[in-house]
Length: 159
View 1 (cartoon, rainbow, N blue to C red):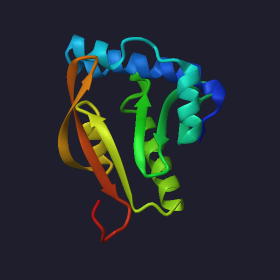
View 2: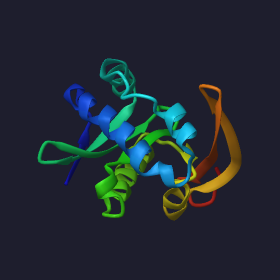
View 3: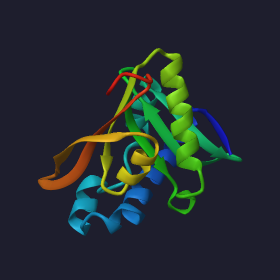
View 4: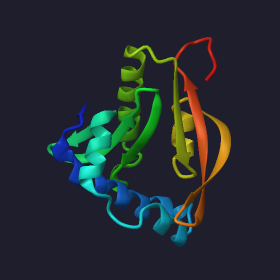
């Protein structure tokens, strides 16, 4: 596995990975209607490419296959961190998080924030994030629960 910067030609694999992961992994914590509202179809790769190039996006590359990706905004928000369903629990997410955190520290950020799913909450807690509040987000008229979380990057400061 190689953690590397995002390239435009990764977009097609990333949008499929996102859609498939939501439908395969998050279904244990969300109802079918919630999954359908969250990821009703595979997103447009061109639209995602614009956003991913505007942010710090990293890819877990397995000999040309995208096994996961993470996206960090310039304000320290982990916009996304997704792994292929078959690679969950294998260290891919942890490697992506470590690389995102290193990039944030290098940029002088003092805190990381994220809005994470019920499914992802335990992973983020293991990475040192803490829940700030439970949120209810509406997608297509359907309410989904997620969590606003934060992690301090300085030893003595809070998020």
